[in-house]
Length: 450
Image 1 (cartoon, rainbow, N blue to C red):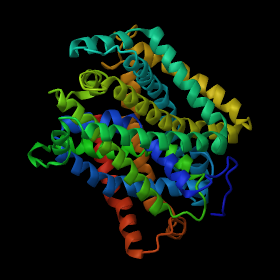
Image 2 (tube, helix red, strand yellow; image 1 turned 135 degrees about the vertical axis):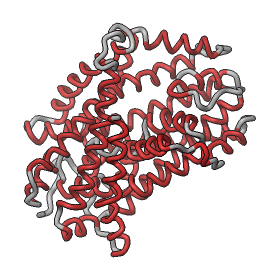
Image 3 (cartoon, rainbow, N blue to C red; image 1 turned 60 degrees about the horizontal axis):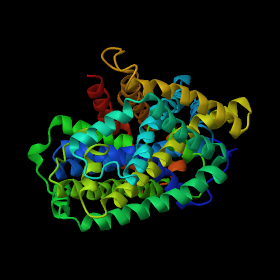
Image 4 (cartoon, rainbow, N blue to C red; image 1 turned 60 degrees about the vertical axis):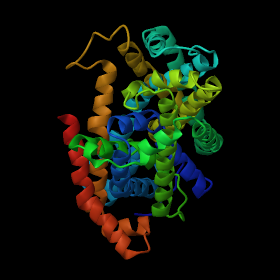
């Protein structure tokens, strides 16, 4: 395929791509979901299985997706259509781009609402709403938030306006500038919180929980959860990484860069666990608190230890930064496509698509209150979108990427784009894409559907 040029611009350096891709991967999944699924699945043994899944499945698929993005140099939709045509593959394979962009579109509509909770909690923690609160009172505060559609809508609107304002300014003035500010601040806040956590009474217990291995607690379901989370935490199959790959400089090693992103993403998830579990254990609370760990258990835990209100506020600022860095990557694929296909400015494309995503998000807002009794197959509007994207669209997108790069593309084109110098490493990577990754992702897909 002839070398393409991006009309949207390029990352100014390899490290800016690494920060951007890490920002996309580091979101609510790392700071909200990873700690509670670790708690539910026994701690250290689950972490080890999760790390193996990242290394064996997540990284190879991420290399494939970034390579496709850089080869096409366009939005995921146009990239996959152009590459499918160039490879003389069935036009069906072009649907990978559409599926990724739509996945990101749907996810951002409800992700914005959940991220709004984190913004609301910054002010609740800072205002002392949890000072001396019992678990029951913390539960009432959370219930009061999600049962109020006006308040949820306000925070959803604020988060979407910030997200779209960044995306509208383009790769260099918008995405790059935001990432270069947010990611160092995120790392700094995480280090400060880790230092704080190390001085709590529960640090030794939290460390032991994360890094002691009891494989008797690992079940078949735990394996599927680990594999699924390893895949989704790297933002695979939702168009974001392919879009960011389109802006990667041509002389950058895809493999080394992806390894760095995966390492940073994993380190942040583990450090988040080392921040959260010691605080929880210091107050004799339960690690397996489920999804309520972030919004109900942690505020109480922070409020009961010295300087907890300050550090609790800092923690929710961290969550807000993580959510925003992911959100801008979810908005980029559809905005880039609109600019290419419709010839409109980024500001126009971002504004109109932002309004549509915001309107769709109202369904999620109402799922927690006025529409909570209206369900389809037992699922609310939010649950339906979450199930559709996480259990069907993302794994299916990842499966198709692995099969397309592994089987449908010309080997010389794949090798030329990936540029792995060691032939043994390249052959192992190709083998994983052809056989291991499709089978593993298919298992996640089937498990999710069942």
